Image (tube, rainbow, N blue to C red; front, side, top):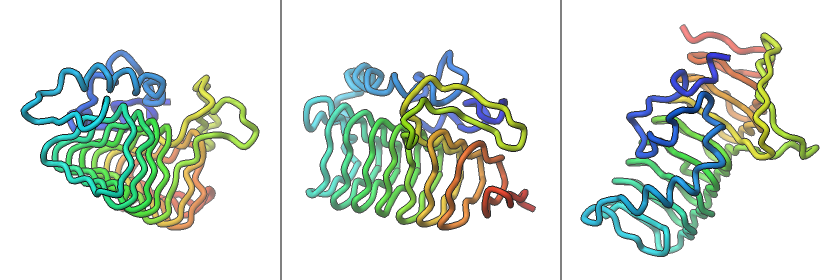
Length: 223
């Protein structure tokens, strides 16, 4: 499925984690590598730009972190990022340049590209969010199937299926995607660039780029 390939979803120049995507085809392939990658990259970050505020937690000197936020390494928080009140970062997280992690938002094993916004009551786990993507209030990624089986990525239009061989896969969200408030992105969801998801949606499978998702049976091209 070409639409699920890294180059179709993400502009890699807009993440400090560019090298983790080398020699892989699909974005979920990097999920098991995020923690180790952060540990390697963190040690190479320029000390004049980044502080290691706790063990394996590297924060750019221009980033803003609320006193009530909880951050467990390994984590990298980039230039100009904002970590707001009661944010909960559980580890294995890259927070991109000028990204926003908001009130009561929880992150775990994720890469947020530059300018990503997850600003209000979001859960983002085992997921990759592309440049300038935005999740509305209360929108979450579901990363484990209810039957606990391995996650597959399925294109319901063509019936193509890719086995991820992973138990935990959240959502692969392309650049400039807007996810409406209260939506649930089911395990293995892939959303193409510049797509809009209606509020209160339950989304699964592969959603085309430059489209509007109203429900599973009504996905229209943007005009």
